[in-house]
Image (cartoon, rainbow, N blue to C red; front, side):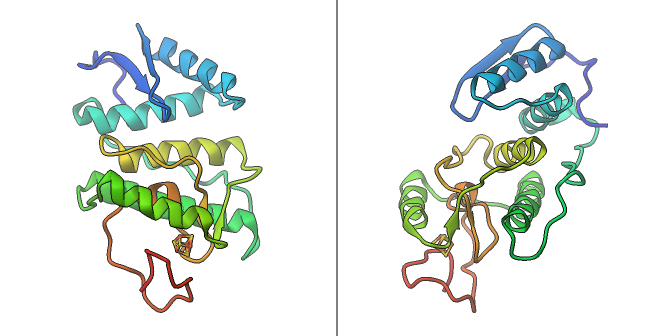
Length: 196
Ligand code: SF4
């Protein structure tokens, strides 16, 4: 399932990182290796399987014909968590991202422009309900990266200086880009752009 590695990709063996770097290779194996090396330079060790998962997610967005069927992101390895804990928030944000990635695949999401995303990001950055991802395991980090790119591919870059919202359970680096109905009946700060 997923990426058919026997087909030569029209756009070549290419992977774009969140920071905008372009990794180019002559095979999928080489591309996965380059991605692992790139991540290592950023202080993140990912396995070959995780590198392939990231590549596959991006290539399937870029060239759907390369993929037989999109493989759902495996969240089964997430740590067990207690409600209200940091890890449960991370799990919730990842589940939200997964839902948005599927919606994006079905082309039912729409995005706001950069100015609006920027002003939302500034509000969230100062909001006490915004929490950074800390001590996330490599599986969670890889899933986060993969899902963020899957939702926003081709439209914008996730805000890496934002974590998740403890109130809404959404990943803010992506949420600020989405054009969605406001959430109701939540006790949000008065300047919250996401809640009514
Ligand atoms: S409550 Fe609203 S402003 Fe605060 S972090 Fe969540 S979405 Fe952003």
